[in-house]
Every structure is written in structure tokens, then in C-alpha cells.
Length: 112
Length: 116
Image (cartoon, rainbow over all chains, first blue to last red; front, side, top):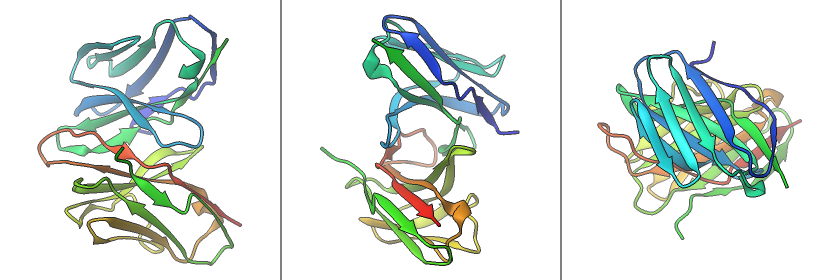
């Protein structure tokens, strides 16, 4: 079993919808939680990161971490066709902040 | 606009051939990471270097893969001999990191490797 699990999708939604993307993990030592966006044939780019539990908001994006459930979420409000991409969650733990463990990614398609 | 660059962008080779992939990290970054991305396994860390010294290569098949940093502006990943199961997209990332804190990693565009 992988340390980070993510539903691969694809997830198809109409423009303007609220999108919810999720990951679960097994290692309770994870402390940093990240969301990356990857467009086709490009490298991942960091969207947001959070430390430990709680919420973080940046524009239309909100990241949530529930450490008690080992569950993280990314919400996208008012989704746009330009949000169509693969979203990868990633995590690192206190023993090595720089070693990231990635989920397999969820492919999102926002239809105009 | 500082970016990580990777060459080649695409590589098709035959089984048994040597493959070398190159990465130029962002100027001033002290850490370079090599990742492999496949549909089945997702994005996996192969190895990483800080200040040109290898810190962790536990994700790399040791018998055929090798990673080096000849200088601060060049990192290489070599596969010899290549096998069809090595077909994947290989990403290089760089960052300015310390052992005691989280730091962002910046990814290059990747090298898409196909081994026939």
C-alpha cells in the first residue's frame, strides 16, 4: 500500500462548479502538505502548502488538513476551464522535510 | 524568469542502450531532486543532492541507474543498460533547502523516455 493515496479520476465538472480533491495518507509523521498542479506535458507547479492541521485559503483555492483522519482536501471555487489539469497532493514529515511523497494525481476537466 | 531546464525533452531508444538525461537547476539553488512519473506508480523520488553531495538515492535501482552532479549547474541521470520498464517521464526539481525546514521544489519540464 502506498503511503499517499489519491483517486485518479478523471473528474469532469461544468464551469463554475465547486471542485473537491482529496488524499489520504498512512504516516502520522507527515507535517507538511502540498498541492501541485500539472498541465499536460509540463512539470508540476506548487499551488499551496500547509503546515500541520487547519485551513489555508488563496483566492479560489482552499486547502484543508485533518490530521486526526489522515485526510487532506483541496477545494476550487468557481472552477474555470483553465483549471483543467492533474492535481497532485504531496507530503513530507518531520524527519526529512525535503523528501516529498506524492499521490498519483487526480485529472480534472472543467467543461465550458 | 528562473526555470529548471532539462534535456532532452523526448528520448526514444532501444533496450540495452545507455541513456543520459541532463538538468540545469535554478541558479543559486543548492538542492537537486530526480523524480520518475508513470501512470502506475505516480511521481516517485529517485535521488537528491544538496551542495552536489548525494543525500538519498534509496528510490533508485542501483544496478542500472546513476546520478551525479559534476558541478553546481549540471545534474545528470544515467541509465545503463536501459529496459522497457524504464519508460517514464523523468523530472528534475531544484530548491534552496536546509535540513531543518520545508522548502519549495521547482520542477523542470521533464524528459519523456521511451525504451523499445
